[in-house]
Image (cartoon, rainbow, N blue to C red; front, side, top):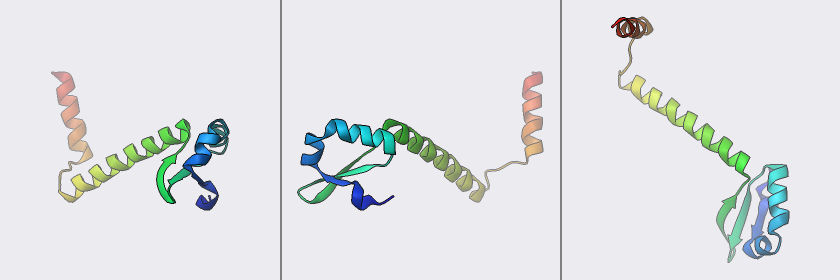
Length: 90
């Protein structure tokens, strides 16, 4: 993806909102909006946003798991399963 083709001034967004929404939905590439020559916001279609949020959630879970491993907060799988069996029997 070339971000250079996906940069538009805010005036373009105001004048072509419907077209931009259609393109975002079809191409699924984010669009950078500038104001006074500076990048201010990035807009994207809802499906891409939801996918990004899901990916971030998974990365957070992985990071938490890695931190717990580094801190020694782990148990053998056999111990965990045995504890679950004991709880289920109670």
